[in-house]
Length: 157
Image (cartoon, rainbow, N blue to C red):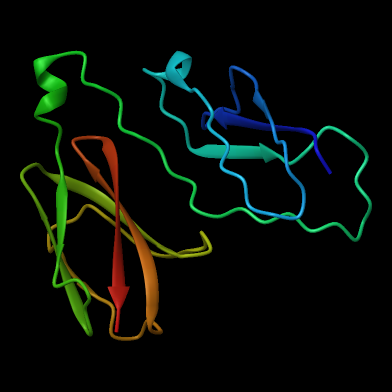
């Protein structure tokens, strides 16, 4: 079904600038759609909402999404160039990973690849994280460095 696809970014307080629509032009095959979020720069979002189409959809239709990605915004000040980054080592890991950062890590959260929160630590003093009991797979670590969230993936072997 050819129809508009909409995407909107939503903040933690449920505020949004509204959806951006792009028309898809093919059916029964993959299509790359590009959305321009340049007007959204300067805000921090924690949700991406996808509206697959704006027409009536039959219950037996299936929609697939793959490889959602974006380009980093250009920094607007020298301070943004020195933004804190984290490193997880080793990656892939078996029993533990060590979180390394040039700034203070106040909290971290670990999510399954499906987005389910499976672990967290407040008041981080030890940056060695025990993952021995986690099943093999891909995980997402969200660390708060000087109050800013930074997200990295790691693999549990």
